[in-house]
Length: 267
Image (cartoon, rainbow, N blue to C red):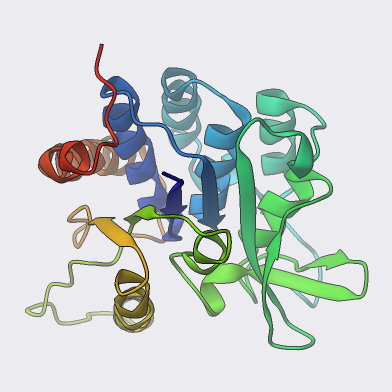
């Protein structure tokens, strides 16, 4: 049985992936391939590189004290507000100058080509550059030139990247969706909140529509932490800890389905 793991984007909500992986690791879950978009690419690359979840959690919580400045700095560019060069240093510390094809677990970094509008999955080349390209939100972070391509956040076209896992004939896919819970009784009080809520609605609907066909082609198990009250635009220790805890809770709720599918190898 070929098992795929798809980790979706969600900015600071991506801390929830760490909680999910913490539970899956404890229960002996192993994926043959992993695809990640944006924050999901950041965490998924670490999983594929064999970085222990405990180390990833420690790094994430330390970073949360510095907010977005832990990962970025002003870009001084007409193309973007922020530059992810600080994040580059972080990932170099985590797994060095590895190439994607050198990883022990097959990895796909989901990106969008701003020149052609294509959904692309990077499977070869500089791992750190691929991860940062996948997380480069257009207009916020500088896009990445990759050969003839101009790459940005893969969430523009596919927030939970199941397509490459299906193409590599995964029999079972565990997909982590960070926008599966939308609270309908909120009223945006500011322009930023209105934009954020609209983005949540867009990504939630897009993901739902893209996962439905996948469920017809494989055994699809969706883990959807309730993150409706986590501000995706802010990084802080309380929000990070809460997101990790919600990820743990959501993963715990799927253990019976995972066990029934033969995905857990408890010792």
